[in-house]
Image (cartoon, rainbow, N blue to C red; front, side, top):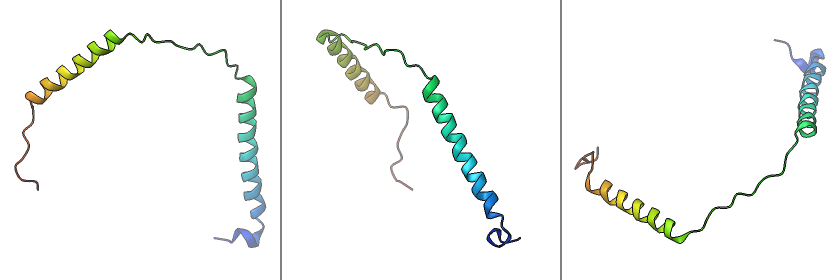
Length: 79
């Protein structure tokens, strides 16, 4: 294999690198120019305290049930 610095092939490598960078810049410019962003609607969630409490109670009940019914038995000795 020939050394690219001695044979003058380094020019081809630099041109390849520059062409890839130019293509990346062109794609970036094209996406920023043609990408129209409409106004973003702000979503509002109800802050009803009663509903959050019922969800918390359901989560606690499901956690309690999962603790009582274990599907897997742990080994007494770790290997």
